[in-house]
Image 1 (cartoon, rainbow, N blue to C red):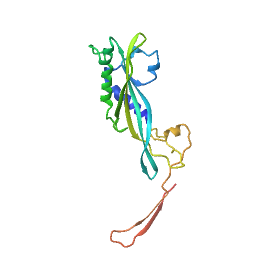
Image 2: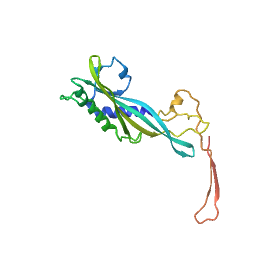
Image 3: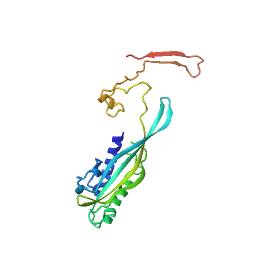
Length: 213
């Protein structure tokens, strides 16, 4: 689910930001990499920041849980002329400022469900990572825009059971099948029993049927 959400965030930002950035991608440690290609800025880089798991409800199968994930969109710009231009944008169209990108990211993601993948996304905070920092004889500015993303975790396995066999890549147990984890065969309906009565009848008759294996 984390990967699905990250890719959905990247896809929405890439489509919405258009030519505001050179690239929208997953974060690969660029802030710690002195070899970052400063010519490929502005950029928005998305990363997962951890989860908080809480009990949501109780059903016949036990407790259900809800995950609140933190995702961060890092906006990075190169200061072409001044610190003010890096933050607010310059006179020329291509001088996109960090403040503009922060606004755009918040506008594109706040209250979105990513095609009903998650609950409406909640903005949490904007933090300065560095301001007009020198790198490769250039000046860079970067902010982190944090969001909370909530969704229900898959229903738990029955006590003592393992995931089910499946060839469906979208099935929650597919991962265990790919890597040869122990599996529990699905439970089949073996029989149906009951009583059929007419609305005015005082008695009914029993029915019983069994399925073939």
